[in-house]
Image (cartoon, rainbow, N blue to C red; front, side):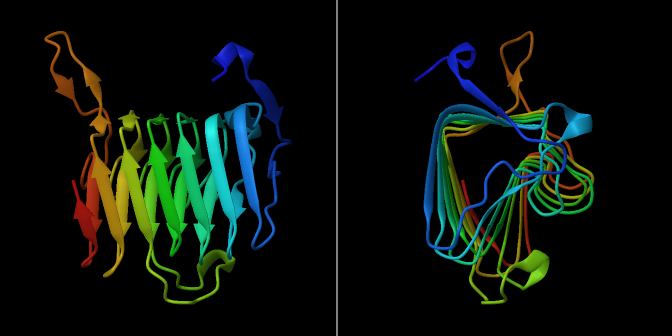
Length: 212
């Protein structure tokens, strides 16, 4: 994989999405830095909808801003996979998912870092929910599935629930495998650096199923 210095950079104009993925299509991105120019000139989300798939390999996604999933919104039968990637400085000022919101789709992320993402509502880094017709997603009643493996969550914030990870609704599932929430203090003890009024690291509500 390319180092950060060797990655190509794609900077979208403020309020513009860098990519549109048509239903049923697959897009693979590798060795890229993608997003806005700064927090004040943020790009808007990439949407992964019906039958579409986005695969990120060694990708940094930064300076995105939107309502449901600042950087990526997965819905219906959409699928997101990511490995060795970084989600940083993404901001959702009104709703759920500081970096990623999943509305009835599938999200599988391995060996990646979520740092400094913010959500006004639940899920400072990731929020998992079911398809209910919001934000342009069709109301199909599909349940959301999120699996994060070997990931690190640092300094993510929610003003409501789940500083790093949030989930709501019966039938939705989240699997958290060998992940780290925070960093090391002077005594080399791991301390959580994610914050929220309810569930600094994770909050699962309303009959959703969390496996750690």
